[in-house]
Image (spheres, rainbow, N blue to C red):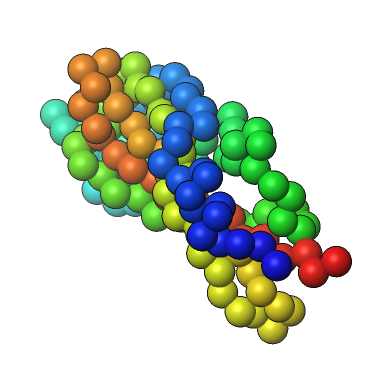
Length: 146
């Protein structure tokens, strides 16, 4: 049985990856339309407050979701949902740095047994190190009881 507290102690809040991003205005509009957005600040690059939707922000990911030395817990991780917190507008053409760390690890009982949930947090910063947004991705892994 996986020791959740030991995983937290060994892996939480340590940067596991960093990646540079620059959002393209045309792709931002395409993502906004695809997600059903109707507000001009997301659809019109000429709008004074044009910015990225939460939907495109949650699509950003660094190359690594788990630390290299993270133990195998069972099967392949499944997507357990996403959450986005926008702290300031994310603009097209602005260099961004995304820093990834494990934010939380917890368990839950499912019909097929114990599930381990891992919250992978990506924080986006601009060149002035202003924290613009936080995206959380939950990974769900069915514990291997073998």
